[in-house]
Image (cartoon, rainbow, N blue to C red; front, side, top):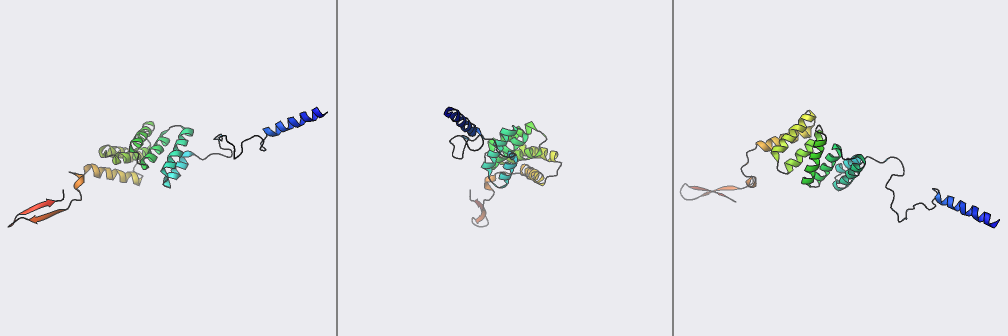
Amino acid sequence: MKRKWVGYILALSLLAACGNAGGLGRSKDSPYAPSGQPTRGNSVDGLIVGHRLMAAGEYELALKAYYRAAGKLGLNADVYSALGSANLKLGRLGQSEKLLRKAVDQDSNFAPAWNNLGVVLMERGKSGEAKRVFQTAYALDSGESDSIRDNLRLAIAKTEKIDYDDSHDNDNFSLVRRGSGEYLLLSTL
């Protein structure tokens, strides 16, 4: 009779351990890593989280959110464009250019990616190519976005400006009299 009760108690304790009531499951202090899957409800889209973080100026966190989105959604034009934009804000121009070129390769009708690629090219001093890229973005956007239009205007002005030497824009010139009626132009070169 004792053995029978011991068997019942042992069976009940094993069943209790398998349940969700705490048992042998993970606790907060568990040394094991969580599964990574949300336990309740749906998770928020990583692109949305990343966009909100970009708006808040948290570019490194936004980049991490975009990488999570890439893991879930795959590498599509939206994800490439978002990754490129975050890298641009972090000053990683080479990485940004590569990612934005991949975005426009995947979706050649995605105006924001074209615009952001133009911004990177302007930052890298490639104003001629940036002008062409902004023209593409402007055409795809049908001229509806003020920021794309303004970027195109700046790129056109930059490429059409005759600039002999940018390093001497703020030089101060002064005239110095050299004798009777002769003047010598001096600069602070």
